[in-house]
Length: 373
Image (cartoon, rainbow, N blue to C red):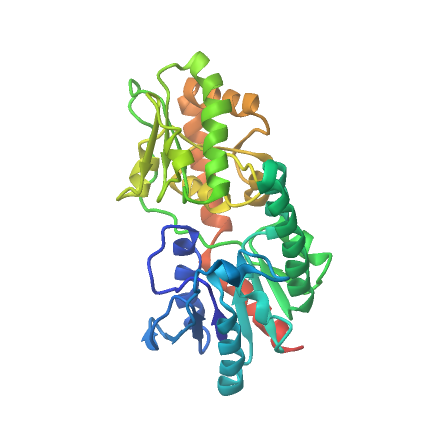
Protein backbone atom coordinates (compact mmCIF):
# COMPACT_ATOMS: atom_id res chain seq x y z
CA UNK A 1 0.00 0.00 0.00
CA UNK A 2 1.14 3.54 -0.76
CA UNK A 3 -0.41 6.16 1.55
CA UNK A 4 -0.24 9.86 0.68
CA UNK A 5 -0.63 12.51 3.36
CA UNK A 6 0.12 16.24 3.54
CA UNK A 7 0.99 15.65 7.20
CA UNK A 8 3.82 13.31 8.11
CA UNK A 9 2.62 10.59 10.51
CA UNK A 10 5.89 10.46 12.47
CA UNK A 11 5.82 14.16 13.45
CA UNK A 12 3.96 16.10 16.11
CA UNK A 13 1.30 18.54 14.89
CA UNK A 14 -0.65 21.38 16.47
CA UNK A 15 -3.89 20.41 14.75
CA UNK A 16 -6.14 17.38 14.28
CA UNK A 17 -3.56 15.33 12.34
CA UNK A 18 -2.00 14.39 15.68
CA UNK A 19 -5.21 12.50 16.49
CA UNK A 20 -5.91 11.12 13.01
CA UNK A 21 -3.10 10.23 10.60
CA UNK A 22 -0.46 10.00 13.36
CA UNK A 23 -2.47 7.33 15.16
CA UNK A 24 -4.02 5.70 12.11
CA UNK A 25 -0.88 4.97 10.08
CA UNK A 26 0.89 2.66 12.60
CA UNK A 27 -2.32 0.70 12.96
CA UNK A 28 -2.64 0.31 9.19
CA UNK A 29 1.02 -0.70 9.05
CA UNK A 30 0.26 -3.57 11.42
CA UNK A 31 -2.17 -4.93 8.81
CA UNK A 32 -0.45 -4.05 5.50
CA UNK A 33 2.94 -3.54 3.88
CA UNK A 34 2.80 0.24 4.01
CA UNK A 35 4.77 3.03 2.35
CA UNK A 36 3.99 6.66 3.24
CA UNK A 37 4.74 9.69 1.05
CA UNK A 38 4.45 13.17 2.55
CA UNK A 39 5.90 16.59 1.67
CA UNK A 40 6.86 16.84 5.34
CA UNK A 41 9.20 13.84 5.13
CA UNK A 42 12.79 14.87 4.39
CA UNK A 43 14.49 11.48 4.10
CA UNK A 44 13.59 7.84 3.68
CA UNK A 45 13.30 5.93 6.94
CA UNK A 46 11.60 3.03 8.66
CA UNK A 47 9.22 4.04 11.45
CA UNK A 48 6.76 1.99 13.52
CA UNK A 49 6.45 -0.71 10.89
CA UNK A 50 6.06 1.48 7.79
CA UNK A 51 8.44 3.10 5.30
CA UNK A 52 8.62 6.89 5.05
CA UNK A 53 9.34 8.32 1.61
CA UNK A 54 10.62 11.89 1.24
CA UNK A 55 8.39 14.38 -0.53
CA UNK A 56 8.60 17.63 -2.45
CA UNK A 57 8.20 20.68 -0.20
CA UNK A 58 5.67 23.42 -1.05
CA UNK A 59 7.51 26.55 -2.20
CA UNK A 60 5.12 29.02 -0.61
CA UNK A 61 5.06 31.17 -3.76
CA UNK A 62 1.73 32.84 -4.48
CA UNK A 63 2.09 31.96 -8.16
CA UNK A 64 1.92 28.27 -7.28
CA UNK A 65 -1.72 28.79 -6.37
CA UNK A 66 -2.73 30.10 -9.79
CA UNK A 67 -4.70 27.93 -12.18
CA UNK A 68 -7.84 25.84 -12.26
CA UNK A 69 -7.11 23.97 -9.02
CA UNK A 70 -8.07 25.44 -5.62
CA UNK A 71 -5.53 27.86 -4.22
CA UNK A 72 -5.35 26.01 -0.90
CA UNK A 73 -4.11 22.86 -2.65
CA UNK A 74 -0.56 24.13 -3.25
CA UNK A 75 -0.13 25.24 0.35
CA UNK A 76 0.31 21.58 1.29
CA UNK A 77 0.76 19.64 -1.95
CA UNK A 78 3.11 21.01 -4.66
CA UNK A 79 2.87 19.95 -8.29
CA UNK A 80 6.14 18.07 -7.91
CA UNK A 81 4.53 15.87 -5.24
CA UNK A 82 2.06 14.52 -7.77
CA UNK A 83 4.89 13.85 -10.23
CA UNK A 84 6.82 12.10 -7.46
CA UNK A 85 3.86 9.88 -6.65
CA UNK A 86 3.36 8.86 -10.29
CA UNK A 87 7.00 7.78 -10.35
CA UNK A 88 6.70 5.92 -7.06
CA UNK A 89 3.68 4.01 -8.30
CA UNK A 90 5.61 2.89 -11.38
CA UNK A 91 8.47 1.73 -9.13
CA UNK A 92 6.61 0.23 -6.16
CA UNK A 93 3.53 -1.07 -7.99
CA UNK A 94 1.28 -0.87 -4.90
CA UNK A 95 -1.98 -2.79 -4.77
CA UNK A 96 -3.76 0.37 -3.59
CA UNK A 97 -2.90 4.07 -3.47
CA UNK A 98 -4.49 5.68 -0.41
CA UNK A 99 -4.89 9.46 -0.68
CA UNK A 100 -5.62 10.68 2.85
CA UNK A 101 -7.08 14.22 2.98
CA UNK A 102 -8.40 16.05 -0.06
CA UNK A 103 -5.04 17.85 -0.45
CA UNK A 104 -3.55 14.63 -1.84
CA UNK A 105 -6.39 13.89 -4.26
CA UNK A 106 -4.68 15.25 -7.39
CA UNK A 107 -3.39 11.74 -8.06
CA UNK A 108 -6.86 10.15 -7.78
CA UNK A 109 -8.13 9.29 -11.24
CA UNK A 110 -4.64 9.31 -12.73
CA UNK A 111 -3.74 5.89 -11.38
CA UNK A 112 -5.84 2.75 -10.72
CA UNK A 113 -7.00 1.33 -7.39
CA UNK A 114 -7.24 4.51 -5.32
CA UNK A 115 -8.83 5.14 -1.93
CA UNK A 116 -9.72 8.73 -1.00
CA UNK A 117 -9.93 9.50 2.73
CA UNK A 118 -12.06 12.58 3.46
CA UNK A 119 -12.11 14.19 6.90
CA UNK A 120 -15.01 16.43 5.91
CA UNK A 121 -16.73 17.65 2.76
CA UNK A 122 -14.57 20.64 1.93
CA UNK A 123 -17.12 22.06 -0.50
CA UNK A 124 -19.75 22.27 2.24
CA UNK A 125 -17.31 23.88 4.68
CA UNK A 126 -16.23 26.43 2.08
CA UNK A 127 -19.84 27.25 1.20
CA UNK A 128 -20.41 28.23 4.83
CA UNK A 129 -17.18 30.23 4.72
CA UNK A 130 -18.50 32.21 1.75
CA UNK A 131 -21.67 33.03 3.66
CA UNK A 132 -19.55 34.34 6.55
CA UNK A 133 -17.38 36.54 4.29
CA UNK A 134 -17.91 40.02 2.85
CA UNK A 135 -16.22 42.48 0.49
CA UNK A 136 -13.25 41.39 -1.64
CA UNK A 137 -12.74 38.31 0.54
CA UNK A 138 -16.18 37.07 -0.45
CA UNK A 139 -15.39 37.32 -4.17
CA UNK A 140 -12.20 35.33 -3.71
CA UNK A 141 -13.94 32.70 -1.59
CA UNK A 142 -16.68 32.33 -4.21
CA UNK A 143 -14.05 31.58 -6.84
CA UNK A 144 -12.32 29.15 -4.47
CA UNK A 145 -15.65 27.47 -3.77
CA UNK A 146 -16.23 26.84 -7.47
CA UNK A 147 -12.72 25.43 -7.93
CA UNK A 148 -13.05 23.29 -4.81
CA UNK A 149 -16.42 21.90 -5.86
CA UNK A 150 -15.04 20.78 -9.23
CA UNK A 151 -11.88 19.32 -7.69
CA UNK A 152 -13.58 17.48 -4.85
CA UNK A 153 -16.41 16.05 -6.93
CA UNK A 154 -14.01 14.82 -9.62
CA UNK A 155 -11.85 13.11 -7.00
CA UNK A 156 -14.85 11.46 -5.34
CA UNK A 157 -16.17 10.16 -8.64
CA UNK A 158 -12.78 8.84 -9.76
CA UNK A 159 -11.83 7.04 -6.54
CA UNK A 160 -12.02 3.28 -6.32
CA UNK A 161 -13.43 3.80 -2.83
CA UNK A 162 -14.00 6.77 -0.52
CA UNK A 163 -13.67 6.73 3.27
CA UNK A 164 -15.63 9.22 5.39
CA UNK A 165 -15.62 9.83 9.13
CA UNK A 166 -19.32 10.62 9.62
CA UNK A 167 -22.65 9.24 8.36
CA UNK A 168 -23.60 12.68 7.03
CA UNK A 169 -20.48 12.85 4.87
CA UNK A 170 -21.00 9.26 3.75
CA UNK A 171 -24.46 10.12 2.47
CA UNK A 172 -23.13 13.18 0.64
CA UNK A 173 -20.38 11.17 -1.07
CA UNK A 174 -22.77 8.35 -2.01
CA UNK A 175 -24.56 10.70 -4.41
CA UNK A 176 -21.39 10.73 -6.56
CA UNK A 177 -19.77 7.39 -5.70
CA UNK A 178 -21.58 4.35 -4.27
CA UNK A 179 -18.26 2.83 -3.18
CA UNK A 180 -18.15 4.74 0.10
CA UNK A 181 -17.11 3.30 3.46
CA UNK A 182 -17.85 4.81 6.87
CA UNK A 183 -14.84 4.63 9.20
CA UNK A 184 -15.64 6.67 12.33
CA UNK A 185 -12.45 8.02 13.91
CA UNK A 186 -10.89 5.97 16.65
CA UNK A 187 -10.72 7.77 19.99
CA UNK A 188 -8.49 6.90 22.92
CA UNK A 189 -10.64 6.93 26.05
CA UNK A 190 -8.58 8.09 29.07
CA UNK A 191 -8.44 5.73 32.02
CA UNK A 192 -9.35 8.51 34.45
CA UNK A 193 -12.68 10.25 33.74
CA UNK A 194 -13.54 13.91 34.22
CA UNK A 195 -14.87 14.83 37.62
CA UNK A 196 -17.02 17.89 38.31
CA UNK A 197 -15.08 20.89 39.67
CA UNK A 198 -15.54 21.67 43.35
CA UNK A 199 -18.92 23.30 44.09
CA UNK A 200 -17.56 26.79 44.76
CA UNK A 201 -15.32 26.89 41.67
CA UNK A 202 -16.12 29.76 39.25
CA UNK A 203 -17.91 28.44 36.16
CA UNK A 204 -15.42 27.61 33.43
CA UNK A 205 -16.21 26.77 29.80
CA UNK A 206 -13.63 25.69 27.25
CA UNK A 207 -13.31 25.77 23.47
CA UNK A 208 -10.25 23.99 22.05
CA UNK A 209 -8.77 23.91 18.57
CA UNK A 210 -6.04 25.07 16.21
CA UNK A 211 -6.67 28.79 16.60
CA UNK A 212 -4.88 29.76 13.41
CA UNK A 213 -7.62 28.06 11.41
CA UNK A 214 -10.36 30.38 10.19
CA UNK A 215 -13.15 27.97 11.15
CA UNK A 216 -12.01 27.93 14.77
CA UNK A 217 -11.48 31.69 14.84
CA UNK A 218 -15.08 32.17 13.69
CA UNK A 219 -16.35 29.84 16.42
CA UNK A 220 -14.33 31.71 19.04
CA UNK A 221 -15.74 35.04 17.89
CA UNK A 222 -19.27 33.63 17.88
CA UNK A 223 -18.88 32.42 21.45
CA UNK A 224 -17.40 35.67 22.78
CA UNK A 225 -19.65 38.07 20.90
CA UNK A 226 -23.00 36.24 20.89
CA UNK A 227 -23.13 33.33 23.31
CA UNK A 228 -21.19 34.44 26.38
CA UNK A 229 -23.03 37.78 26.81
CA UNK A 230 -26.19 35.71 27.28
CA UNK A 231 -24.42 33.34 29.68
CA UNK A 232 -23.09 36.25 31.73
CA UNK A 233 -26.62 37.54 32.36
CA UNK A 234 -27.22 34.55 34.65
CA UNK A 235 -23.62 33.63 35.48
CA UNK A 236 -21.53 36.81 35.58
CA UNK A 237 -18.47 35.01 36.96
CA UNK A 238 -18.33 32.47 34.14
CA UNK A 239 -15.02 32.28 32.25
CA UNK A 240 -14.51 31.16 28.66
CA UNK A 241 -11.10 29.69 27.87
CA UNK A 242 -10.09 29.61 24.20
CA UNK A 243 -7.36 26.98 24.04
CA UNK A 244 -5.18 26.14 21.07
CA UNK A 245 -1.99 26.75 19.16
CA UNK A 246 -1.06 29.86 17.20
CA UNK A 247 -4.11 32.05 17.86
CA UNK A 248 -4.61 34.56 15.07
CA UNK A 249 -4.62 38.29 15.91
CA UNK A 250 -8.41 38.21 15.63
CA UNK A 251 -8.59 35.47 18.26
CA UNK A 252 -6.06 37.14 20.56
CA UNK A 253 -8.14 40.31 20.43
CA UNK A 254 -11.08 38.42 21.96
CA UNK A 255 -9.30 38.16 25.33
CA UNK A 256 -10.79 40.11 28.21
CA UNK A 257 -11.54 39.94 31.94
CA UNK A 258 -13.75 36.88 31.49
CA UNK A 259 -12.19 35.46 28.30
CA UNK A 260 -8.75 33.83 28.33
CA UNK A 261 -6.87 33.03 25.12
CA UNK A 262 -4.17 30.57 26.16
CA UNK A 263 -2.28 29.70 23.00
CA UNK A 264 -0.48 26.36 23.18
CA UNK A 265 -0.89 24.58 26.51
CA UNK A 266 1.29 21.75 27.88
CA UNK A 267 -1.67 19.52 28.73
CA UNK A 268 -4.92 19.88 26.80
CA UNK A 269 -6.64 17.21 28.88
CA UNK A 270 -5.93 19.26 32.02
CA UNK A 271 -7.78 22.21 30.48
CA UNK A 272 -10.77 20.00 29.79
CA UNK A 273 -10.70 18.42 33.25
CA UNK A 274 -10.72 21.85 34.93
CA UNK A 275 -13.84 22.94 33.03
CA UNK A 276 -17.55 22.58 33.70
CA UNK A 277 -18.33 21.95 30.02
CA UNK A 278 -16.88 22.03 26.53
CA UNK A 279 -18.59 24.62 24.36
CA UNK A 280 -18.06 23.35 20.82
CA UNK A 281 -20.54 24.63 18.24
CA UNK A 282 -19.84 24.53 14.51
CA UNK A 283 -20.00 27.74 12.46
CA UNK A 284 -18.81 26.43 9.08
CA UNK A 285 -20.40 22.99 9.25
CA UNK A 286 -17.20 21.01 9.89
CA UNK A 287 -14.02 20.81 11.86
CA UNK A 288 -15.39 20.09 15.34
CA UNK A 289 -16.05 16.34 15.20
CA UNK A 290 -12.84 15.40 17.03
CA UNK A 291 -13.19 18.25 19.52
CA UNK A 292 -16.59 16.89 20.52
CA UNK A 293 -15.37 13.30 20.72
CA UNK A 294 -12.29 14.02 22.84
CA UNK A 295 -14.31 15.99 25.37
CA UNK A 296 -16.93 13.23 25.47
CA UNK A 297 -14.23 10.59 25.95
CA UNK A 298 -13.26 12.27 29.22
CA UNK A 299 -16.87 12.39 30.38
CA UNK A 300 -17.00 16.19 30.18
CA UNK A 301 -20.46 17.59 29.36
CA UNK A 302 -20.46 18.86 25.76
CA UNK A 303 -22.55 21.64 24.26
CA UNK A 304 -22.55 21.63 20.47
CA UNK A 305 -24.65 22.33 17.39
CA UNK A 306 -26.87 20.03 15.30
CA UNK A 307 -24.39 19.00 12.57
CA UNK A 308 -21.68 17.54 14.83
CA UNK A 309 -24.33 16.10 17.13
CA UNK A 310 -25.81 14.19 14.20
CA UNK A 311 -22.36 12.86 13.26
CA UNK A 312 -21.44 11.78 16.79
CA UNK A 313 -24.73 10.76 18.39
CA UNK A 314 -24.93 10.21 22.11
CA UNK A 315 -26.09 12.38 25.02
CA UNK A 316 -25.03 15.88 23.95
CA UNK A 317 -26.49 19.29 24.70
CA UNK A 318 -27.50 20.54 21.24
CA UNK A 319 -28.31 24.13 20.28
CA UNK A 320 -28.56 25.83 16.89
CA UNK A 321 -28.65 29.45 18.06
CA UNK A 322 -26.78 31.60 20.55
CA UNK A 323 -29.87 31.61 22.78
CA UNK A 324 -30.08 27.81 22.73
CA UNK A 325 -26.37 27.36 23.41
CA UNK A 326 -26.53 29.80 26.33
CA UNK A 327 -29.57 27.98 27.71
CA UNK A 328 -27.62 24.71 27.67
CA UNK A 329 -24.74 26.37 29.51
CA UNK A 330 -27.24 27.46 32.14
CA UNK A 331 -28.58 23.89 32.35
CA UNK A 332 -25.07 22.52 32.93
CA UNK A 333 -24.19 25.09 35.57
CA UNK A 334 -27.49 24.89 37.48
CA UNK A 335 -27.73 21.08 37.44
CA UNK A 336 -24.20 19.69 37.97
CA UNK A 337 -25.39 16.15 38.86
CA UNK A 338 -27.49 15.95 35.70
CA UNK A 339 -24.61 17.27 33.61
CA UNK A 340 -22.24 14.71 35.15
CA UNK A 341 -24.64 11.86 34.37
CA UNK A 342 -24.91 13.02 30.77
CA UNK A 343 -21.13 13.36 30.54
CA UNK A 344 -20.58 9.83 31.84
CA UNK A 345 -23.07 8.48 29.32
CA UNK A 346 -21.22 10.32 26.57
CA UNK A 347 -17.95 8.72 27.65
CA UNK A 348 -19.53 5.25 27.45
CA UNK A 349 -20.95 6.09 24.01
CA UNK A 350 -17.52 7.03 22.65
CA UNK A 351 -15.90 3.93 24.13
CA UNK A 352 -18.47 1.72 22.40
CA UNK A 353 -18.82 3.49 19.05
CA UNK A 354 -15.43 5.03 18.21
CA UNK A 355 -12.97 2.16 18.47
CA UNK A 356 -9.69 2.07 16.56
CA UNK A 357 -10.27 -1.55 15.53
CA UNK A 358 -13.44 -0.46 13.73
CA UNK A 359 -11.67 2.49 12.11
CA UNK A 360 -8.92 0.27 10.71
CA UNK A 361 -11.47 -2.31 9.56
CA UNK A 362 -13.25 0.41 7.59
CA UNK A 363 -10.06 1.42 5.80
CA UNK A 364 -9.22 -2.21 5.03
CA UNK A 365 -12.70 -2.67 3.55
CA UNK A 366 -12.06 0.36 1.34
CA UNK A 367 -8.69 -1.10 0.27
CA UNK A 368 -10.38 -4.35 -0.72
CA UNK A 369 -13.05 -2.49 -2.68
CA UNK A 370 -10.51 -0.37 -4.55
CA UNK A 371 -8.17 -3.29 -5.25
CA UNK A 372 -11.03 -5.21 -6.85
CA UNK A 373 -11.72 -2.55 -9.46
